[in-house]
Image (tube, rainbow, N blue to C red; front, top):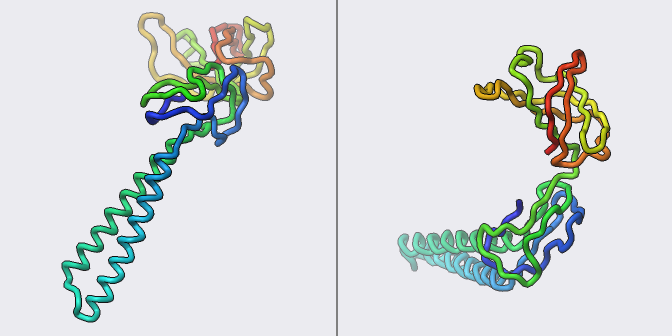
Length: 214
């Protein structure tokens, strides 16, 4: 879920569910005139402070300025640099880039809508190969290792995929006597969507465990 980092006016946001985007692409942009103006002001103040410091240093070399005047001018430069970094950071918050390539599955904002900090704007999913979250009987705990091969059949499509265990939870659920693990589909995963369910079977056995894509 992509949320708003600032109080601002939305300029750009995907309007349709299913919109595809690439990693690093700007998916939300806010109106940023005020923040950009503050950054320009901060840059000007830094330039002025730097020139004042250089003048104080030259005067000191001619014994026309004291050490405290140079120190004060240097402090003003440091303050102006900090203000510029803050202004530049605020400008950077005016656009949100995609953390990965994927698709929009839900949109919760519209162009020209004013947002608040933390307000959800988009729900997105990755276009990469889905991972599988698998729940298995604790009786299989000693038989399953990272790298164990599974055959996963999806209920919604009936398609079977080869998968390999990538992570195993170190905790057994004492109530259900099960443990969870994560597996990755090997090869193409056409037709496999987040939220689908199915059954995972050990490649060397017939023990079945439930699986869910995410």
